[in-house]
Amino acid sequence: MTKRLNMKEKTTGKLYDLWAKFYDSTFGTLVHQRQQFALKQLRPQPGDTILDIGVGTGMTLPHYPSNCKVIGMDLSHGMLEKASHKIRDRHLPHCNLVQGNAMFPPFAPASFDHILITHTISVVSEPAKLLAWAEKLVKPTGRIVILNHFQSANKFIAWWEHILNPFFLRIGWRSDLPLEECLEASKLHTLYHFKLSLFDFWQIVVLSPSTKPQGELAPAGSPQEITTGTPDLTQYDNASNSSTLGTRLSTPSA
Image 1 (cartoon, rainbow, N blue to C red):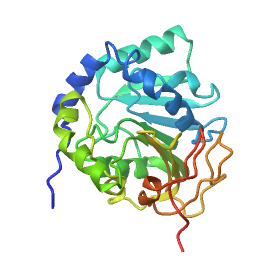
Image 2: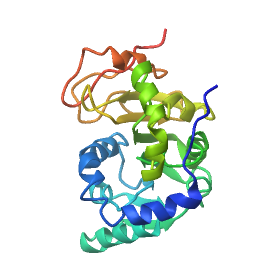
Image 3: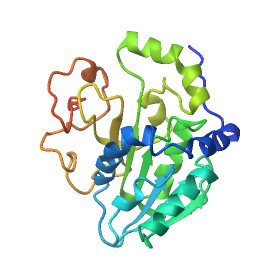
């Protein structure tokens, strides 16, 4: 088995303290639209309590409904400082911030109606452990939505992602993380997963602890049907059915 390198929390916080100084104007500009689209997949209802793991500089915070309570958690003090400025400047009293380690979140089980995890699961040392925690923290009828880059099912692209991983670790994230590795320690059900375009680097994955999840099984805001079931990323590499809002990734399980 090929040895995979992961991020380490003891260095991640300091690294993202540095990133915080210019995150919004660099990487943030690439992912802002995707963050908004991922947030929509939560389908929050009035009175819901939502945990935003890896809230970073708070780019998602202005887009949450004001009738929900939002807890943004991040390891980096520098990132949270930027997020606190957004809460103050944009008058977001329904949003609160917590500095914490996603490997040991300081919350009781079933504390949240929904959980959003954007660009974080490839930043932690144990991605499967993070999802196992999220499964405990979300209510049975809730959703866990992940926005992240995952390793390609195309063997050639996956090889390059693995070769380049040491470089990406130095700048803050892992490039060769398979989605299947993230799911191996949980019993979460995949409702659907998709990309905003055929050649997008990032994927939105919608999970639920319930076998009978509430709500529609299709992306919010997209006219295109997205199939449900166990992720089958090989379908993406040969996909021919795409639109500007969603790309079919998997076929229904038998």
